[in-house]
Image (tube, rainbow, N blue to C red; front, side, top):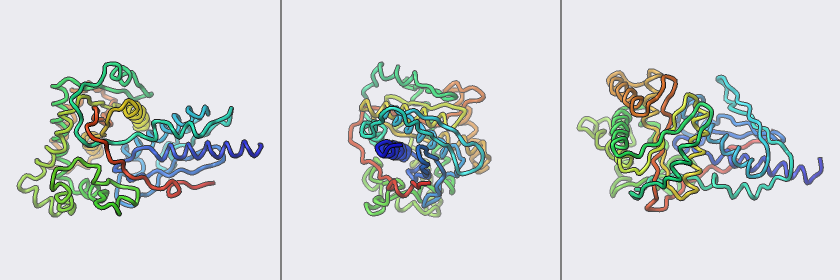
Length: 350
């Protein structure tokens, strides 16, 4: 192989690695590592700096699926073929991605791809309905065992907002979930500059909201406030934006990787059309915990009711599961972008 070919291969692999690293992950903790081998990438689990979902949890696997979708789209932009080998089982290796070195790949073209500008916007959205052409494009997206269900009728939006609030009431009464969330929060610019976690400046907080988050971060404080119903107020705040959304996009799938790929495909397309997107995982998280038997006994009946209502609302088959809800609309404010870890922190060679 000529030196020019070697350089082109290295650039192609680097762009693919950057694309994988740009994928969303739970609480922005970025538990994915990328190992490069000649003209291939291996996606692996990387233990983050704080508590988060385990390596084979559906939430983590959705992030892997999103990373795979990013690589496929980046490769297409470079006119490079890809072959993906998914590694099943309990190990820390998720997938091997071989990049076919044919033609004249153009790395610069891929770096301008919309996948690198995909972002979360947690602010209020305009009431303007989403255009019918966009609805048709998004509704038509598919990926193997995953499909999209659009929710825009007012009664269905209100119903899903109510279910979101109900799931959030469970969430704010579960010590483990609260501890994970609190550990992911980054309150100062210095903390956010580390490149991972949830920068609270990206939240749409009311006056005093940051101080409240700081105060309730220790579980014993929230547990005490819950005795006077604090969890109800917090859940109402979390569910309110769903009820005002012009469009909700439900990602439904039996397989987490397919769900992640489809979610990312829709998210990139929506952002590219100037629409804001915010992911909501609270309902899928509670349903997954119910199946795993980790919902606290006093709260189990509530989650069982949520599971049944979600299945009815979204017309789920016995094999399907709600994996994610995307709140979608025209932005009223530009969002602060969450920082990312430097690529060298998550990429190794050989």
